[in-house]
Amino acid sequence: MTDLLSIKDASIWASDYLNKNVTSSNISYLIQYGRIKKYGDNGNIRVCRHELIEYYMSFKGSREIDWREKLGDDLNWTLSFDNLKEKDTTKHVHRLHPYKGKFIPQLVEYFLDEHIDDFKKQSYFGKGDIVYDPFCGSGTTLIQANELGIHAIGTDISAFNSLITNVKTSKCDFFDLHNEIKRITSALKQYIYQSNNLQFENELLEKLKVFNNKYFPSPEFKIKVRKGEIDEKKYCLQKEKQFLQIFNQLVDKYEIQIKQASSQRFLEKWFLQPIKNEIDFVYKRLNEVENPQTKKVLTIILSRTVRSCRATTHADLATLKEPVTTTYYCRKHGKICKPIFSILSWWERYSKDTLVRLSEFNKYRTNTYQICLLGDARQINLFSELDKVNKDFGKIVRKKGIKGIFSSPPYVGLINYHEQHAYSYDLFGFKRNDQLEIGPLFKGQGLQARKSYINAIADVLNNGKNYLIEDYNIFLVANDKYNMYPQIADLANMKIVNQFKRPVLNRTEKDKGAYSEIIFHLKSK
Image (cartoon, rainbow, N blue to C red; front, side, top):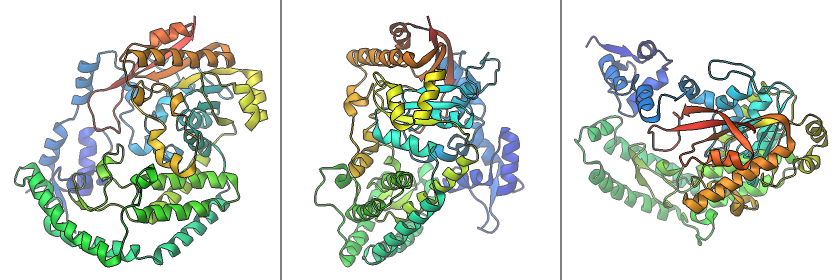
């Protein structure tokens, strides 16, 4: 077949064909997940150019046209940032910890930096200015403000959100952090080696490898499923039950306690007993740390580790369904997978990743102030709260005033913000303020919920005006399907002077349909 290309040549060809960078890893991904066939052996793998064309033609060039038809010609594709890779949108500390509902840093940068273009006719912020984010979340606005030499204040009702942001923005002692990570990791390894868990998991992995190679060869199995040659549901249920017998034998052999005695608390319901034991062990060592900032960074590392070790399937990490306590067929990977029985690999991975990301951000860090205050943005006194944590910054804010706001308020009835980090609230004992959330999922999207949301967002803006300069600019990112923001602006005695409608391409949800959000530009009436 003359149409065969090496993986490297395929990446070069595809980059030219799609007019965007396609890496060798991208081609390998298509092979691994059965999107295209592989030809040759592992030392001389080839792919078919015709199959690549067929795959790319299924979406190439059609998305923008399709989305404009569905969402309107006023869609600003410039703000799609479709040229960016995931590593660009999750650069340095922006991926220090998972967080639902955050916007990409490039969107913030677009409005905070001093450039102008066909859509952004003027610059709104400059070096030394102060920007405010009353719905700080995981701190994207504050981080980008720092990169641009802009001071920033954030507020958030969630104690955990405030912790995430302040860990990202604060300097740390890398030598002390590295030593504490080394100390805790060494102790954890010793603890694990003294139990049966390591031997149990090693033998389980060996048996899974043999079983999956026999019954779920990759990528042949997924290709046969797509062609209808295998009834995936029937076949996989049978194999799932078959391997479960092997799993149960190993549990008995090594006397492993899988389930916890109680399932009342989050840490009891969603974590296997071996995991819970290791979490408790690391938590105790973390509390021995003397440096307050080091301790906060380690808290984020442990929280991220804990999140990845919940007893759930690989496909349900974002939205938990039911705890998984045995091996299971994984549709995501097309084979039998297992729940996690040790936090060690995740702890080591996230410890290393955190050190790298904090170090990387230091290359861009400017000598400016960024602080996230814990409190209700509807009534918080920014001056008095700033004085409690940084009087020097408080003096600057009083003298200069805040230039404007850039924020993404919660979308009505979409997310329970405290619940998404329930594991950390449970483990670290942070106070929960669920009842103070604006527009949470548990309140729904009904008429009463929308009225409450409108009044709450307006209250936030009215309180924020106490600290803004006279000629302020406010940018709020929202998917306003209920047309609430004209009412919000009116209640805040503001006017909407411009709207930027952008397509949201890289969503974490399973729904990949056409979706947009609007950046509302508000000023004083």
